[in-house]
Length: 346
Ligand SMILES: Cc1cc2nc3c(=O)[nH]c(=O)nc-3n(C[C@H](O)[C@H](O)[C@H](O)COP(=O)(O)O)c2cc1C
Image (cartoon, rainbow, N blue to C red):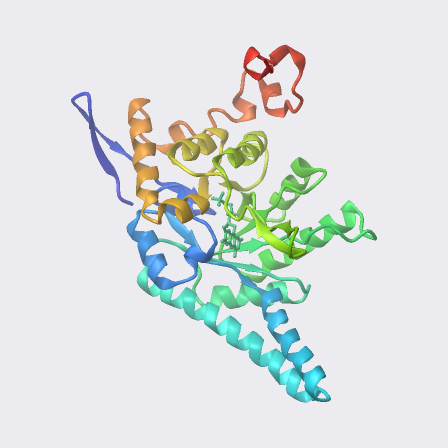
């Protein structure tokens, strides 16, 4: 693991940014998250050059494969009487081709990169979750990130039904592979703290908090649903900062912060909250992949200013369990006593 020599106030000391990520030792806590940026080998090489600690590949989506199949089925239905034998072949072939393409990306990344390569996937059918996990492991991924989310829009299902489905799947995935597994969650749970705790007890190595999803908007002239706010804002950091602070030290696996990590200061904040590492995406869409090195420089400068030599020197320093005022982390209402003049209208 590479250490960095820093000269400060005539003193020379070794600064070590390495952290444990799902049990893998990585050279620093800045990981590039799953996105279009991590979907091709050219970008993956740039990510390594920028100094990132690890990379999570763009997810492979079972749903996308299924859509491709369905559009062929619909076309067949319009033009001919569908030949189901032929379509069975298509189902097999489309899935096979898509999976092969993804596996070659993992293999190429493993050949070209020294940093850990984490594969990511999302499924919709119960029986596919372990199939994909095994395939990604066989292709050489260092770890797997399970991008698991179904919108809870089914009126017939209760909170318990939905969460039990997740927990059972996670347990199955965990026991189907030997490499580390993390689960990337959203914050759409009524009992978020206890749900995250139960996920951590399945044996997973880490939980990524939180995923960011496609948000629909309406085009009011074309009467169409269109995507909105694809990239996060720096202010989105507040959500993961609160929950990493509350959960760190209280769950049975590592925590990785995601959403709103746009600069070196936000990396520092998430580690102070207790995160093992962070994932970053939107800021790289805005500032380019090379911006990772700026984030790392800012982290080093801050550590030097505060005489921290390693990440553990400040990790979790501001988590709720270490706070003299733990109620601060759970405050949600704008109560009168902390309103200031600044927010009064003239
Ligand atoms: C264009 C784009 C594509 C994404 N694709 C995926 C994906 O395939 N799988 C996934 O788990 N997350 C995906 N994400 C979500 C990111 O990994 C990340 O969780 C989210 O953008 C929040 O992090 P940020 O605030 O640093 O952008 C995508 C995000 C963007 C902007």
